[in-house]
Length: 461
Image (cartoon, rainbow, N blue to C red; front, side, top):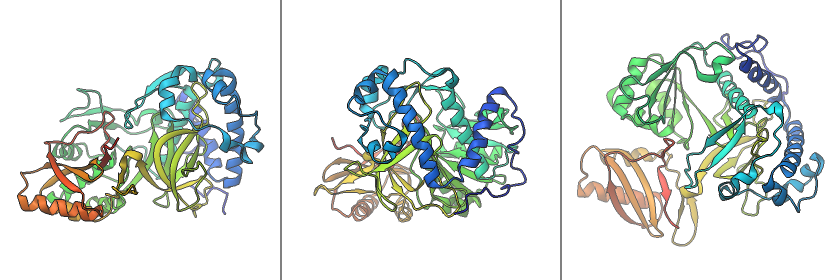
């Protein structure tokens, strides 16, 4: 394995040896310089350092929070060596419900001053359990550093124009103008960037296209379902965005064929990322491959089976995360509710762990009347066949009973009886079971408060 960094990726790549633009930027740049080296460490060296961080974090949590004083009461004092040798798997897993119930007891009474001020954040609650957390300025610096790592990995021109279509406060970033800023957010504290513009995700597809045509961005950040709607519209209308160099997606599960669709319709590439508001960046897409590298400098991420044992490459399991640097409210072995597939070590030479695929949450799993569960994989290519059955704008499948699915649609016109029969037949064939099928129609299928949309949800208790 090549553990030495390659030469510069691009003539436009910022020089990490130069000084940052602001005092905050200097702290972020210091982390970025460190990560420019650690990404090339071997997986063994990275794991060794992670367990050193885990040892310090556990001791801090044990002695400064009421929750972990009790939760770790029967866990003997450990060293990084004993953690690596198996003691780590004896540490209790933290369910999301515990963060809701014991949140105040999880706050540290003695956060190191070097970690900076504390800030409150709130999750969107896509699991039905919105939670409040506290994090430090150091944790925010890591967030900014990982944001810049993503830009540098994918060789983005920081002087370009950055557009985002995301959730916004009511009345903010509304069509037709959206909002605008002189810079790319916190990245401008480190390196000089170009301008950025934003549009509320609740705009219609037609409004989004019109706005993008007028804004002419170099980069577009939004959710995969927005990209899917935009590409369908642009394919039908023969629209391309002349300046667009890259699409960046986040927050939702990426359909496996969406990268190819973006290339076909807009002639550009798509890069995805995996993050959570309460845990920060979890993984970024490798600059050379479609899989993801875990941000091992910021989180210790496990993928576990039903017996809480780590799964190997090619296997899928539950994602359990430990944030390494948030000492204000430690999250140790926090089960975030996602499932992911582990990948083999990457040929790019980075020792950062690999995730091949992020599957989503348990509520995205279909349950057959036999009790068998399976991922619906609605991102597979045959969804194009489904969209061709009728004038469908949006769709969502909901399992409302063990043997019944509701097909929720936003359509351009009322479906005929034959079209509904065709949709029902496709649904039964796709899910490989003769489910009872019902239909529900809406002018627009709703997103969550965070702007997320799920193509399949299970409403079984």
